[in-house]
Length: 307
Ligand code: PMP
Image (cartoon, rainbow, N blue to C red; front, side):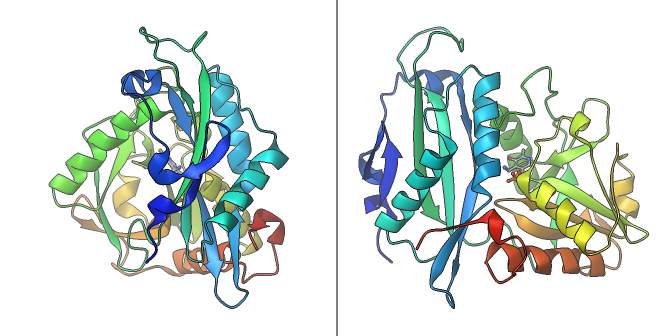
C-alpha cells in the first residue's frame, strides 16, 4: 500500500504531506490537552467508484460547538470545511475506507493552562481504517472501575482531548484484564457509554439508550441509529439505565464512528441474551452499513461525494 504519510493533510491553512505536519514540543495543547477533535469516516464504494464522507454537517456543528465551549474559533465555514475534506481526500487519491480527524487546538507556546488569549489552530488528517473493533464476533466488555467525568468537570457536549485521559484509563484497564472494551457508569451510577462509543440496549424488542443528561457524548452514530430504528419501526427510549440492565438485556450494542455498530456477547462474565447477535442489532447494523457505504437510496443527503 502507498504510504499514507505522503498524502496531504490540512495544517496551518494549507495542504502539506502528513509527514511534514509537526508541532513544537512546547505547544499549549500538547502540555494541557487544550484541544477538541472530531472523528469522521469516509467509506469507499467499489461499485460506484466513489468515496462517501458521512454526515459532514453534523461533525462540523459538533466541532464548532466544542470550540464554542472551549473558547476556540473554527476558522472555516461549513462549505469551506467540506471543500477542504473533499480536496484533501481527492488529492490523496484515497480509494479505501478512511478515518478523518479534524481538530482545533491551542497552538501557541504559552505557559499556564487557560483557554482565552491563546492562539487557535485547526488541523485535519486522514488515515486508513477498517474495523476499529470487531463488528461480527461479539465483544466482551467490563464495567470500568473508572467513573465517567461529569459535564461539570469536563464538558460532555464537547469532544475535548483532555477527556480522553478518562477514556484511556478505562480502555487500558479493560484490555489488560482481557476484555475488548470498557463501559463507564456516570457519577450517579447509571450506565453512561464506552471509552469511545455510545451504548444501546434491547429490551422486549425496543431500544433503550442513556440520555444526554448522563454525561455522554452526543454521538452522531447514536443519532443515526435512532433515525434508522424509527424507520424500521423499532421504538427508542432515552432514559437513565441502571447497571444491572447490562446483565439482563436481550441485546446490547455499541455505536460510534470508529466502532460503527458492534454487538456485545458478554459483560462482566455474563452472557448477553443467547450469546449471538440479536435480530434488532442485526437489522440496525445492516441498515447502518448500507447507508454509510452509499448502497441505500435513503439518506443520500448524509453523504458527501469525494469523486
Ligand atoms: N462517546 C465517546 C466518548 C466517543 O469518543 C465517541 C466517538 N466519537 C462516541 C461516543 C460516539 O460518537 P460518534 O458516533 O459521533 O462517533
